[in-house]
Length: 279
Image 1 (cartoon, rainbow, N blue to C red):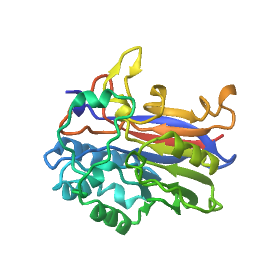
Image 2: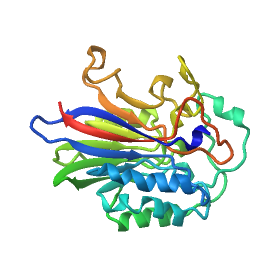
Image 3: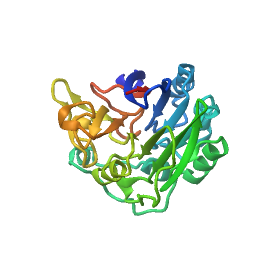
């Protein structure tokens, strides 16, 4: 099954100041882990062998109320690396059965009308205790490979929990924006905040892709061609003439699915090792 064909993708982002050595950033997103998914747990542990300088987790880690222990076991080798995170809706709310046709709507957002049922607070506390920076509507600085990087993040825009933090980026080698769902309003705010790179997840890359056409939907208001991979915002790409002045945007297709829609087509589960290089 394609849902088990885990893939490590690689991309190079020419964004560092001249003379800076390369920085390896591992982008992990949308694990949607259930306790029985041992193959996924083993794979997540294995990608620590990429030896990243920085790990960024863009949320939707959980898919079951008993997944916290297995998730922390999966992330254990990565928690020894400098990191940062935001949470997604499926860190707060356990997935429930729903009509799968709703996913084909341009933006299938429906705010849950129930109390949070997943251990989001415990997950966030465990990642903070490991030294990862919590970017839930806040700014911070992380030191990776001995260099300071400025960060800004928001809580999940898909649930309208995002409140862009006031202030200005700290002086650092690079300024990163982090969000679970790549809604246009948040991307615009991060671009205006002078983010050099924005990392996001949520879309599952469309989850069902048509060869030659791409993603059918993104489950947010971003366009389909940016459903996954490396692009620019608001222009096409920062190195294209029509993308001059744009911010690099990487959207991860993620490594999981809802347990009630365990299907992927032409869209393998993934994490991405981004190599930041001098522009």
